[in-house]
Image 1: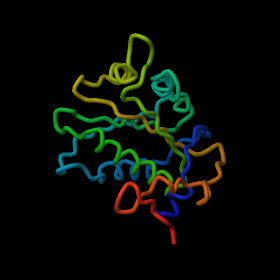
Image 2: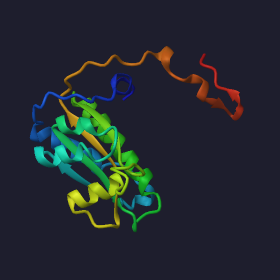
Image 3: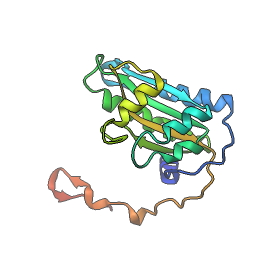
Length: 179
């Protein structure tokens, strides 16, 4: 797992090559194996692989979702907010496991935050996605993960670039020291 994490980078440019059915099945399995608080499983997922809705999802928010236009697959990560008060956390866990599974399959991925983002001055990104995909109001949208065959090479972060100063030991005022 640590090797996957060391190599994973956000990929925003894809080749356009479709995913294999087996790859999609493994991605779906990773979503459904994601742990949730109290095992409530409030998350729900919409897989989008048709060009027209992918194009529309690419303009879901003002900035940062354009890469979805070139993705082979977009996974809309959402949840029934009536089932859990921690649906955001549950969706986030599923989304990162999806990204790590994509990495393990040699695929690139990128997260487009939707919750609490604008589509335009009148509409939130979430409302735009709900309307586009026919989601009921109680099904909230956390993010969209774009997945595909990478058309770019990104260098992994070196260990020396990690922000070790953000790690504390036993108390906030005691920095953790790598030995």
